[in-house]
Image (cartoon, rainbow, N blue to C red; front, top):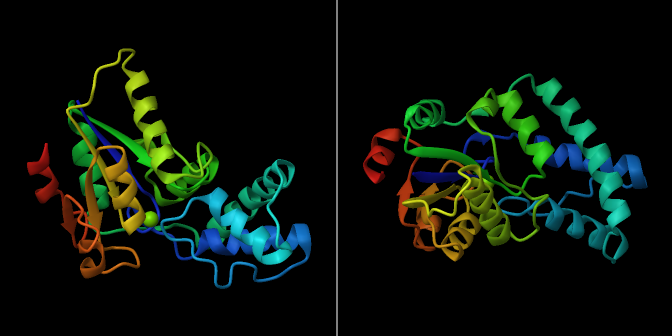
Amino acid sequence: MNLFLFDIDGTLIQPRGVGQRAADSAFEYLHGIADIMDGIITCGQTDPLILKKMYQKAFKRENSAEESKKFYTVYLECLKAELEEEKSLEVLPGVLYLLEYLSERDDVLLALGTGNIEPGAWLKLKYAGLKDYFRLGGFGSDSEDRAKLLKIGLIKARMRFNDDRNFQKVFVVGDTPMDIINGKKIGAETIAVATGLFPKSQLYGHEPSHLLENLDNSYINDLI
Ligand SMILES: [Mg+2]
């Protein structure tokens, strides 16, 4: 059995800033401060780390657990509203075909490895029409540390088989240096894809196992 851990934003879908806008609206609703996301880098980051940066920027302190809980409740409502407005999210080139192909193989388990909190991840995938390809994963709500959430995704995938077998191969698929760096930390083969903000030349510098322009399955076929 082989495991794929897919990042979402910039890898499976083009998020068009829905997450940032939802975070902006939620923060303004809770604290009356607008445009908090200006200048905060989100790509390759996890939701809890982004939230920390927002509180640091606004109040020069960390957010409490209670504040996080409140924020995420409002954020998810705002995200839903943004997605409703967007109607659907653009699925990136090659993704549908690849997921269809991989989901039909009996030696592949599809999972997520994303910095989105879990309900946010499922919402985005629902609006992109990709939700049914996945059942589990590692999420920003599992850990703010990308390597840890990938590891948790791997453990959940193992538990699904009710034994402690190792996967023949584990692939971490993502569009940022963070996906490559942290994929390596869990011993995965990394597939970097230049459909997000980072061009191939920049991803190349982080030495991914495989580097693709987009998720064209003809190449990935040969990896498993
Ligand atoms: Mg990404």
